[in-house]
Length: 394
Image (tube, rainbow, N blue to C red; front, side, top):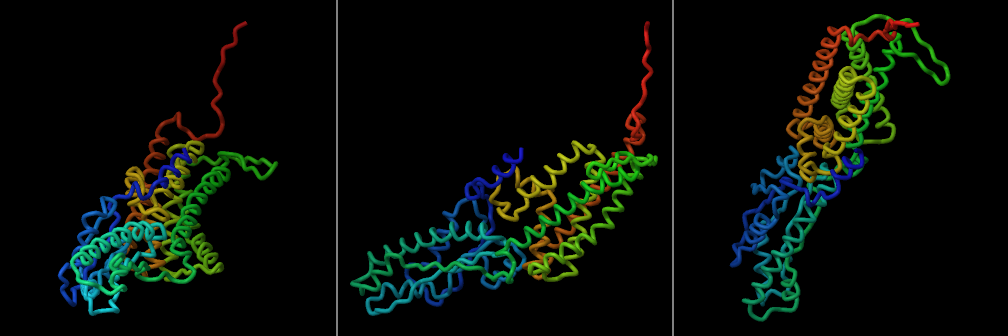
């Protein structure tokens, strides 16, 4: 199951990509060329980029907000002097023409793979469109200087870079992913420890420390009260665990801006994951519950997080899973806190909403099933096995 989940989610990001959002910005041209080169390049992007991208043509003054709110993975910028630079190549009197340039800006906060998909798809297309324009100019122009002819063979220079560089010590855009992974594991492992710990304190299962085995006297508690005790312990431990995670991150030098907001978000994340995992234990029991938690909170959550591979570049199953799996909103919230200055429209608001909803759903389902099981005598949690009377025939 694990190889199937992990490998199928990441085997072909470019082939699976659908609707990765990018923008095209055509600045008002300072000089109108006879070929309208800027329009030709923008049309080529729009018509030939394919269904892997969702293309929005926006005004130059809208670009900053699109990046600040993490709405786009990248953008192609055709500058105001593009037509003028292209026209200068056809002027025989101009022996020092300027090179037409298109900038590809990537959203560094989305990770290196996202930037590679954007630049790797846009750059060849822009270059090919420029070569077509150069061929038309060369066919119609009079005798040209050697420098002009050389430039017309490959007239457009493509510059690639991030719109805004990430802070130092941010793991090249991976720090949010690994910080989120730690929170996920702390919540999952915390629930996996709290569940048997409370059961052993209540005498439901023995306590084992190495070769030492001890069973306490059984304390009769209903399933609901037992689960409530586990929930309370998990909720008390979550803020302490969040402080420890942040302290370790600070010790190793991870850039963690907005420490108070990050602590609140980390505490809520650990608590929501923990109580939800405890609810799964309450519903399915220790054995099957461990497997269900591992699949839902680790394997499927990681592959649908968008932390390493953009959600738009994963198979349809994982794009669907991202709508309710917990790691995706955790990633959105942490990216907003780490890279976007606590900007709510960049994903923090949505992350808070989904984490709270997830925690409430976990609490509700856990109590609901525990109450149902309490009402059925054969589902008693008493640890002593029932002694059946056996008729002995001589």
